[in-house]
Length: 341
Ligand code: NAP
Ligand code: 3JN
Image 1 (tube, helix red, strand yellow):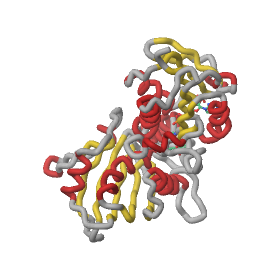
Image 2: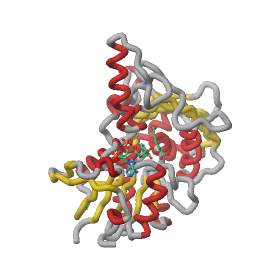
Image 3: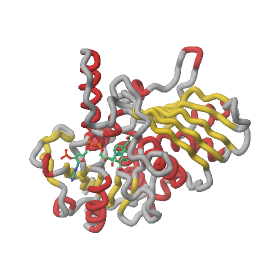
């Protein structure tokens, strides 16, 4: 056998569709692929490498004889089916929040903590999209000069919410331009031509769950429990590409030039930073690409050891599907993934 038996759970969704593209583009070594979703999609046909494949309902039976199961059907589905898939012999890479903070489950960004993959017991968690791009950019700096505090504001595209939200922005934008008043369905308010500082549910301390995920996951991946982090997560009327304005306080001074130099050599990072020609990362141009883009690197005039920067990445690729496939590739490279169980 040359390749692996792969399953995508949530294959009809935004992340699932990106999984198919990433596996095709990277020539992931597959012998077979199972496209799984809810019973609503059973029988629907999708193409993988020019081959038509029927979507099946996710059941215990459909998760048998799988080597690697890529989950993106929400936390509830993962909580129920990921242990079943792992018990049946698959290694699960789960895109949901279900297991991310479980101490027994590795939370992995291959550029940062690939060795944590080796501790898995059948399930490996993929971080939240906003976390991934933040740590890919900040970890190379942290290794040189330990980070003490991060203050981050995110500008998150609607594709992070899924297909229904992409449709909602499209419909609302047309309605507003035609002089109509949109009725919101996916979000609590109109998203077209608007900003919503609410992603996931509000908690008792006034932060949202998304803001909490960003802080907790960052500390877990970087193995840095004492970094202080405060986040404000905002939904913006952009289809693809999450952006982040980040203030970082280091243990010692770091110049913008030094940070640029370190980041220019960092894996998965591309520096776009020349204010003379208005060169800086933008979600529009990050969409469809694999790198985490960093620009606007400058001294924080409010903090002696501080830098401020602007970080952008494709939330469906590096923020979700690509990172998960890179975890699988890393396992293959280290001979940690066996074909045929
Ligand atoms: P989406 O476009 O709404 O797609 C949801 C997918 O889940 C569809 O394939 C849907 O199948 C499937 N599904 C729903 N209920 C199911 C069930 N009971 N059994 C099996 N499949 C079911 O959402 P998305 O944007 O792809 O996101 C899906 C999940 O991925 C999110 O809930 C989140 O947990 C995770 N995610 C993670 C990140 C990240 O930050 N790493 C980013 C985005 C999403 P049907 O078409 O049959 O309904
Ligand atoms: O909103 C975004 O931009 C990212 C969304 C991620 C998301 C959406 C629904 C459920 C998640 C996640 O990955 O944390 C979840 C979840 O699994 O809880």
